[in-house]
Image (cartoon, rainbow, N blue to C red):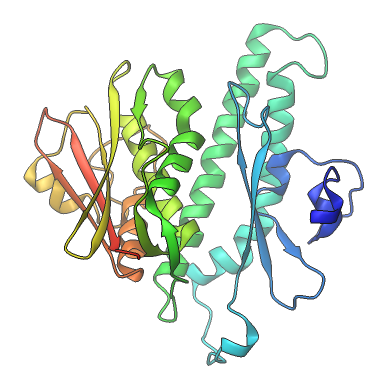
Length: 307
């Protein structure tokens, strides 16, 4: 890849199930299974769009993540009977992702009038279709993650990371969504650093969930704070908002599976915080909440401190 700067990244991989030679919409490639020359493992491509208001106008960050550890460190697992939940992640999700992504890509093309002039009401219909498709993709991802984190053999791949850098990336990814609601995010300064031990993509996943919830439930025109702290061998990042807050009973229930605290119509699956806490604990950390009704909420991810 270093010798091929300027070429599409897809020139260096084989996208499973795709025979298209023309450039594909980025939503069709996000989450795609790919094969790399010289590797027998399965890989997943993740594209993080940059720029706004149209995601991707300033390019993308590409992550290629192996679905299994290297063969030399991979112990064979005993065959397990497939359950209905296992079918979601292993069988159903890969089949559904590409057609749903194609629906979203086509709807976005219509919404932005790239194919030609269009009446405003039809552009709005296309926006609704794209939003519904994105909700379905998010639900598929949540159900797939649920299967993964509840598997007996699930383990993370901890490494030395900069928790401040991961927090800034999460803020950058969701910055446009916050701006659309007039919400400002006070992120860690670029000279801040907080070494920690954790799996980069899993830590990013947790922080994106915390920030996404804060943006969704905090009032328009308010502020969100992302703060770092190091104490007692732990590296901590806190996401604080100015939302309506949580009662003691809600704080006890908020990390439960499929718990939406009585909310409806917000597009959430009720799995994000449950999965995030499972991920935090799998990395030797914790995810906790402090809140009071009318005073917002503070969600804190703690990880083993790095060196």
